[in-house]
Amino acid sequence: MDRRTWIAIILCIAFLIAYPFVLKQFGLSKYLYPDRPVATARRDSAGTGRVVGDSVTPITNTLPAPAVPAPASGPGSLGLSPVPVGGSEITGIHSIAPIAELERAIVVETPLYRANFSNRGARLLSVELKHYTAAHGASSSDAVGLSKARSKQELPPGERVVLAGGPLFGLDLGAEASLRPLGAAVYSVSESLDAAGVTRSVIFSLRDSSGLAIRQTYRIRPDDYAMDYETAITGVPQAWRVGSYSLTTRSWPLLNEHSLQDEERSLKSSSLVGTNLHRVLAGQALKGAKRFDGNVQWAGVETRYFSSIAAVARGSAQAVIAGGEQRAVEPEAFKRLPQGSQPQQPVAVSTLVMGVPSELDPVNRFTLYFGPNEYSRLSKLGGGLDRVVDLGWTWIHPFSQLLQQVLVWLNRLVGNYGVAIVLLASLVRVLLHPLNMMSMRSMRAMQRIQPEVERLRKKYENDPQTMNTAVMALYKENKVNPAGGCLPMIAQMPLFFALYAVLYNSIELRMAPFVGWISDLSAPDQFLRVGMFSVHLLPVIMALTGLLSQRLTPTDPKQLPTMYMMNIMMLVFFYNLPSGLVLYWTVMNLLTAAQQWLVMREGHGPVVGTTVAK
Image 1 (spheres, one colour):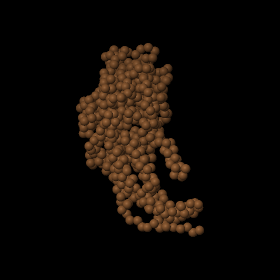
Image 2: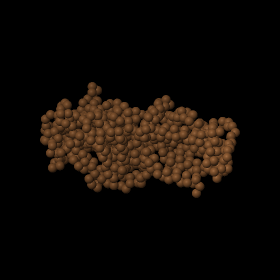
Image 3: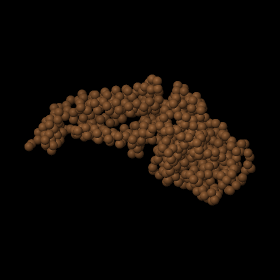
Image 4: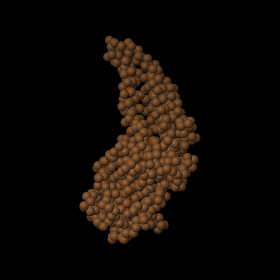
């Protein structure tokens, strides 16, 4: 085999080795894992959601009325009873009424969301996002849902994205083997209202006969998806041997995106421990929970566009546990899913383990976030919450952040994210124009002197040292840098990776239209459907523009089949990617072709030959 064949073999092997790693880094690991067999699980009767058997708890995107079980009793019961909340301290033991009369639902409305609480377990049951459309909501349709999402109107309840984890968030004593669930305990509850009668805080409180007292306070920020959350735990009996408590967040029914597979494959438990970011896919967590010990900054669950996060503001964080469960889709919700959907869905579970505070200073504080993965909003909260948004590797974050801000600014300027992507691609190409022209001129010069190079190689084929000397002299006399075509391209790689991360993960592109059939830049374009096969026209246009660019690129004729094959591979790779990303690449191909045309119009002097003295 000749040298070119060996090089091709080595490149293929390197591609096969690097392919899984590259897919994982770009959030495309879905192509690495086969469809998972359906498993079954059920939750324990305390409402904690731990897997204990072989049945399932249904899930839905609407909030059912809370069930009313009998009072807890027996050796496993904490014997908790509610107490009144009159101020910052919990005093006295309230007389116990029947639990059926004590259980109560609390609803908090803000301009951005509707939150549903229950005093059974002091659980946050669900958060309905008023300005984000669920693709498979109770009354959502493509035409109505998309139009309202674009106009930023407040959506009716059946069309909203609902984060309902069954429950979405809750506190329990202990963790893992020492866990003492509080899901069955009925808390006393009080609300603080402002002058307009709007709820500003919700306080849950209870005490048991052993002296244990727990207070949980949710403080509402009216114009933000974040809440201030405060816990106060005192009087934990030493006989219980409980030195920690758990804050658990669970993911919601996967009904929000058009592609259920993409939504499921993006579902994960995420946490920031020290400076290390951990992301555990729900499918991986089903095989076994993973624990990360250390100084936890925040922990929660997220999909590509939405997240539920608990960030530590004050307290001793010990660890975070990333787990997984399975739940059945509620029958009414299942009817709205595409044909062939699985009747069960994975659930990501993230448990933040906190040390029980001292009796002298029992208060811990947190920031809770239940909403969209908006980089600008999360970065304002601090505490490393901006890293919830996947902007690629850490070393390209400065580029990603800048490009994301520019994209949002361009949209404000033109009012269309598709046009903003076109302008962003053009802006990037203008900024990189000197480097690109340098690279293209170098490639053109290399092609121009290629016949002379081949003549020298044939002339000195029996004397490699002389041949190398002659070729380098030829490069020098014609002022050609052999690496001139590659170095400018390498310098652009960080920018390319940053653009990929921004366009793939920006929630601003979710259900954002461009023109014609391109109605959602966060999903593949739907030109038409033939049976079960969706025809995506934009990737085909991208492949044709790539072919045009290659036709204008100086290339060895022997390499043309390889270049055409690469273009076909790009078509396959981009076929199911979001149309916003494909649009960007299409524009870049057209601008590259224009730059190649400019280089071809430039004049070139004759090739200067060379000889080597014997």
